[in-house]
Length: 247
Image (cartoon, rainbow, N blue to C red; front, side, top):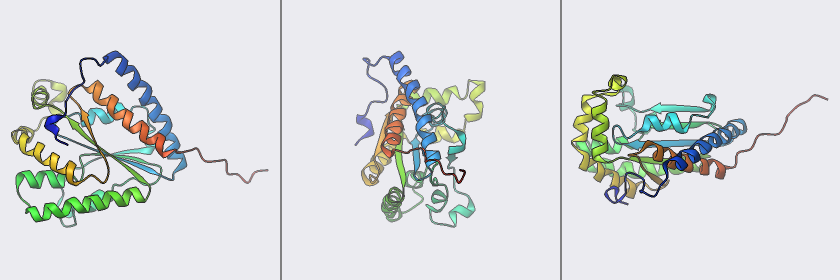
């Protein structure tokens, strides 16, 4: 799987209005299935969102999960590790945020940053990175074996689309808060990050990766909603039976 060979947007034959309608229906259905998952409280769902800066992770979370019960969901944004987190193994802070039974947790960035960043920025030896590939595979396998379904998404935008979105963060007052100078520095290393993502897809495949063309938000949300809804249906959560001692 090579990102360079995957389109970042829909084909011309895709009807936007039809896709938006289908997305709306799936988003509503996700809310219904999520409530069953929460009520049953036997399984959990973990969503891992990766992507370059401005790939649309925040918007995807807001729109695809618009109909869920907030009590049964939790979003975790992983940033640069703290001093305490650095003192532990790299999966320590990740494991602490894995969803308990009944919950959906959404990772906005994840343990894959602990491969991407040190690899591209070259502050960890290759021998350590290689070990992390296997450690992640073992970790995700363990989650699946213990009742947590893992869905991994890479929001795939073009280099040109990312540039436009980063520029908008400097011109649209409503998006000033999203701007970081460091995002532009990271964007200069685009090719290195794409190459590392390709390596991750090859090495960390215990749980399937879903590459989501994300130049058009409406198409991105449709594809993500489809994967999530199908996963929830496959998990087959059910409302529990009535338990009462009343006569």
